[in-house]
Image 1 (cartoon, rainbow, N blue to C red):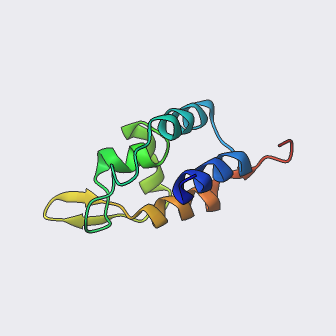
Image 2 (cartoon, rainbow, N blue to C red):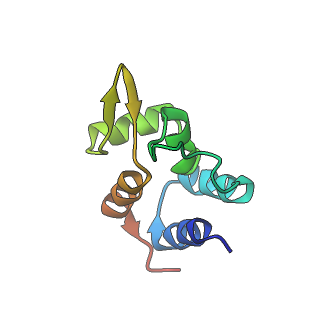
Length: 99
């Protein structure tokens, strides 16, 4: 199994997240193709960042930015690093002790 897929499954098991995020993560994991979403620069566009985070909505990604998700503005575009998204989820998610 691909390491990223393994990490996402582990992350989903470790965090108690809203239904939208969990169901989105499942859809993402089932339909994920390695290398499909990350550009050659390593940055993700808004659309790809939402897919990487588990198919979250634009509003959720915007809220995450307001709550401290690191992002980069380049020429009017907002870009994200996958590691920043993962770190944000780990910092802001709640542990699910029932798993």
